[in-house]
Image (tube, rainbow over all chains, first blue to last red; front, side, top):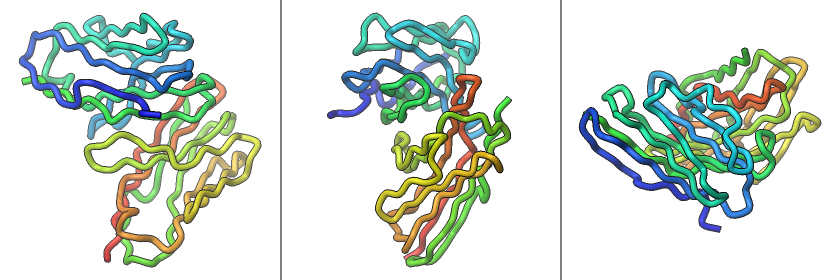
Length: 114
Length: 111
């Protein structure tokens, strides 16, 4: 299995621009998570999908952030408009049994907003 | 609210030493606990998953224990190698349906 696949690996953009991060979970997994990692705050859960339905989006910082999962094999995290404080590594993870199953992470998307 | 603490934050040991990494959590009503390894610039790699009904899990030179009543887990690494150098994170799934990560322990194994 190829594991969780994220793109792009690196993104540098200017403040105000739209950013779209993409994730392909492990085939057969029914849960997908988006995390953000920074030095100051560590790993933060942004949103969690189960069977393509958003279950918990309480971690989404503000309305500038949105996430979709149109099917079981694809999810996007969009930031519009982006701000310098959004600079972080964004991870996607998937699991088979909801929140109690083993979690597998992608390599992350490093976002820099200038 | 669940809080997960990992001590020490950083650790440096000579090659060959056995070592223990600690993870403590405040809410003992957990479903399971997972240990991860993160190399610089990389994602998190799952090492061990311990269900709440289990006391320990072993994989190669790694052994993780879980004591729910005291809110503690330890990751034991036997005969450490330079390739073990990484940041180790623990994460707990608790009854509030939340996954909470500790801040990690940055391990350096010197040749």
